[in-house]
Image (cartoon, rainbow, N blue to C red; front, side):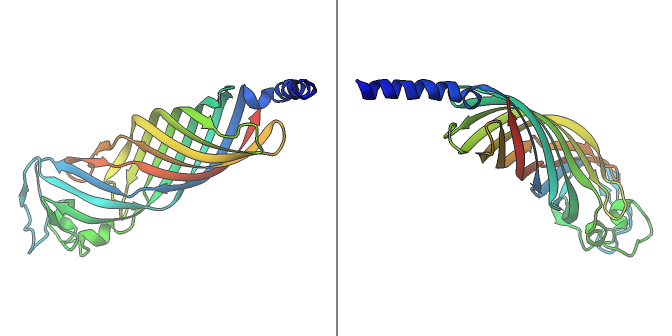
Length: 258
């Protein structure tokens, strides 16, 4: 009986001492590295006449509307920032609203193909519409780019925290939302893609939090985020281009519980 009384008293004290961990509001912020996935861009042209890519593609060659084209874009590593406001529930779950901003610069484009034929070795006049050869191949022109892909996203998240009462609490989570995707492709200072669109977005997360005090945690996490492909009009020649937007983000942050 004495043991049962002591156990009951300890349990009651535990419930009184841990309401901040069991249920309550929190705010968090984080910063991290954005590993933007390469994009295999693809689309279809409108009807247009080529420039002077002789002898491979003679000046004025007619390209039919609907001809498939595309290339691969490789991105540099970028960064991501986020702010989050949410609530812990006493069943181990928590929910939040999160705003995220990320950016990654374009490293290079390669493998430009039109109608299934790779044209990296053809004079760039062919896609610039110039009757005079430019003295640089398509591959050389698109090799360097100061463009970027930027995401401003809002997510509704659900998490499950393991070992909620412990000093170290691993967690998993997922979220749905929308993202404004801003893409600039400007190889060799030639504007090809420049626009933004809002698309459906989703993410999955995993990480762990460390309780520094009764009200403040630090955490590290990995998040995989993606949107539906974004499609923009090509500014160089008639046609649309679909761009893949996926990223893996490693971040660290702080969380205040109240």
